[in-house]
Image 1 (cartoon, rainbow, N blue to C red):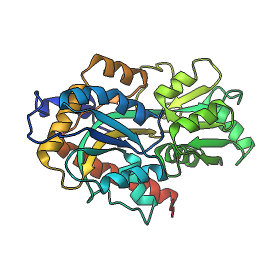
Image 2: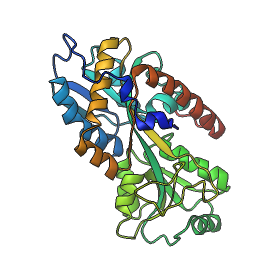
Image 3: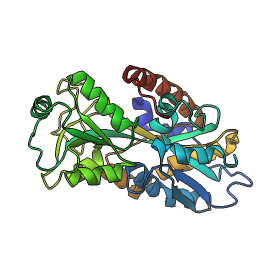
Image 4: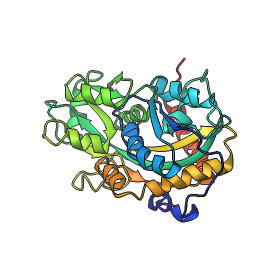
Length: 321
């Protein structure tokens, strides 16, 4: 899930500076399927991009939430849609790298049934604990977990999700036992954490920072390789002795055989929209790092991401029906 510094800084220079004209696209509103519940980071970022993309495309960008099966339900819908650019999927590591590894009967093929368009964000995670749990440092938290093996619970937004796998990596490195409580999205998982129904979770930094402002939930560390501007005094997991790579990426893909000019135009529109001050402020608040890639760059990135997650899932031996 690591994205090179060149891509984090953006490759807009590799994209057309002016959005190229393309006859017959779009002829109608462009639908972007977000395969998770409303209110999660993916949904927030896509809704930030939608209005600006619509203005540049000359057609509204309509966001449709279709949650279920770690993003597989909505992703399958797009795989079966016409390859004309009017239906896109908001994909991430779960939909296009992890799901094929954990679902033997997955109803879509992330390689053959999709056309990469562009990534637009990278989002690191923070380890956050519920109000009243007690520990204020990672060492103190792990001491608690060791005193009560299998009793301390952690939330995720689905079995096999990046939030789940990041915590499993921490559990393995720290040699502890915890109870997994999966939810159908980041928003309900966060609500359960704040309500004290679960003890901890890996959560995107922006929502985690917002939840911890009142001092009740505690952020114990961040899963990025470097400290986060929003949390400059919070150490990375690596600095704390547990180098857990906890983050996710977000991007757009179309059905297989999407015409190259259509994919290139959408990528250029996304790159241009990311320059908008309002969009940049939303990304900053959410601690999401803007990313731009051409369709070819995204294709290469996806191949590397599948290889990375393949070793993680194999090590954890996760299989779902």
